[in-house]
Image (cartoon, rainbow, N blue to C red; front, side):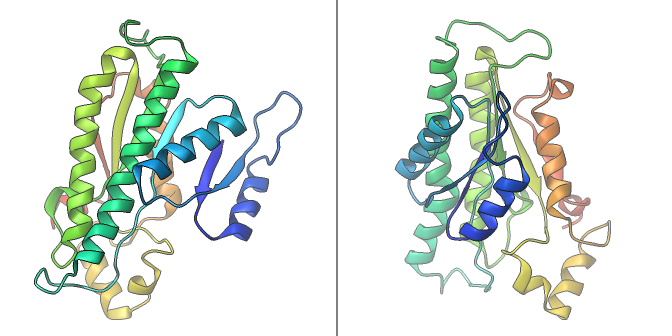
Length: 240
């Protein structure tokens, strides 16, 4: 397994060690790769580095992203914020997907004419991470909502293109999750109360609760799922 980080080297190295490090003889390990993700080229470089480290990749999970904690009305949103959000949340994903699909083809010979995969078997998996914001919008965060909506369209387009080649593309759409990105907002008691009031389950998710459905989509148990938007948000998308 390989994962990327931007600047949290100490935490990344600790996680890589926890997940197997260099690995035992004949056993897969885990490697942390430092990589900015602002452009398509960045995405392609990350895939190249991961392939060099692991030899072969079977799954791509594009779960990086940025979200500005401050509410910004559209008339005050500067172009720099707009471009930064699109660059990280969308442009880099394009590069990741492009390079990963090329790798799937190179690693397995030509998959263009291979036909549908056998039951429970895939030539590769891609899971993109969208959001409730990509489905219902998010006031004062239009830059973020636009990118997450685009990932849903990308999921559906890629599924139509790649499912016949045995590559399954799906999307997981979380709502509020307790992460470093949301920490400052959730730490505000008033904001926390407002947020949890919109979630039927009455709380935000843990990262593990998002990871589980991502893993599921990459198993034979999800062998007939392609192009799906898998909502993992405590029912929030239904009532917002």
